[in-house]
Image 1 (cartoon, rainbow, N blue to C red):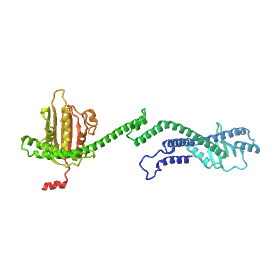
Image 2 (tube, helix red, strand yellow; image 1 turned 60 degrees about the horizontal axis):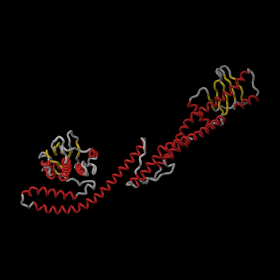
Image 3 (cartoon, one colour; image 1 turned 90 degrees about the vertical axis):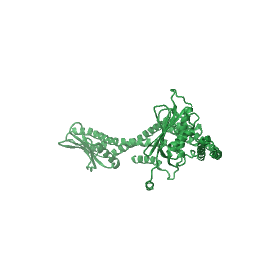
Image 4 (cartoon, rainbow, N blue to C red; image 1 turned 180 degrees about the vertical axis):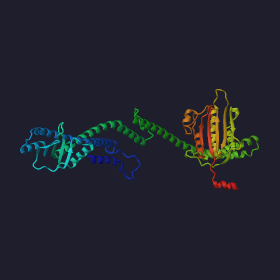
Length: 506
């Protein structure tokens, strides 16, 4: 029975390992009953109940053997006491044979300290194959003797003895173990059949309970995932989450939430794809228009007018940047920006260009304060760093445009910078209303991190991508006063040793 149990358990777990080497990673169709979780659960329950019964059977069969021998000794002792009361009287041979046949023994002896008396025996004392003391035995010894009788017994002669009543006498009998082995086999068969019945009933009850509580909800989740993967854009494919607080109910609620979030993401991706197509069409025509504007603006440099000469350089730089942007307008849709062309550049002129392009004037009630020393240089791509600072400052201007502080304080944008070793820290601070909670939750996320109604959130998303391309960091910093503070940290590029030595020799 133990060997069969091991084979059953091995067979159950070999189902998982019996997979072809070239099995595809695609989801497989539903398996049969025995290959599914329900069948495995049923087989495992039967196997574990049978294992428990085996562990119970081992000591119980040893105990049954001891009781059987004890009953046989008690039966023989009852007859032996009567005969022993008749002093100096020997039973006739015919009576002895009938007594031995009735008790299933070969010889009956009563032993005392001073003498022994043969109550009955056969003509020739048989050879003894084993001796068992019913009064003194150990648990392991009893188990060993029980299995020895089960496996090798049936045709052996054994000697069994134990105390006779409350006195010091001992009753001893010699018998064949055939009847004992037969009784043990019948007991083992009954235990086996009872174990099978108990295991089947237990497995059925556990199967029905767990199938309702566990298997059916798992199948429902699996079916929902299969149907959703076939048509993820259909709202009807979203799982209706079950009510409850157990693990499967929580898993179903999370699955439904993930499916809804995935549908929103797919819808957003579809909108982005359509937007990219529309932008590419607009970009094609806009690039031609800007090229014409660039040709016309070049002629403004030749106009001898002080006002024109003042604004012409700014206009030319702005148009040049617009033309450059049109060449890379789809770079965000391609996931990454162009590799930055880094060089050391003065930071203050770049910030002044940003302020001039934003046309921030004190007459509008907004003060643009540049706190950058002239000697601070940053190792960066000038155009990309301009876009970073411009995007953040433009958001600050838009936040301050319609904002009226209740205490009448000034509206100000401050750009400061400091170099610490090989890292330049740029801080862009404003005294506006601050970043809304929704924008904070989706900070730097395109189309979700906008701080104003109708915004796209692309400015901060692009700024973060450009800063990361430089190996730097950008973060929203908490401050005690109203407003928004962004901090950008840009490290210098590592200098190769041979390049450093060559520069020193030159």
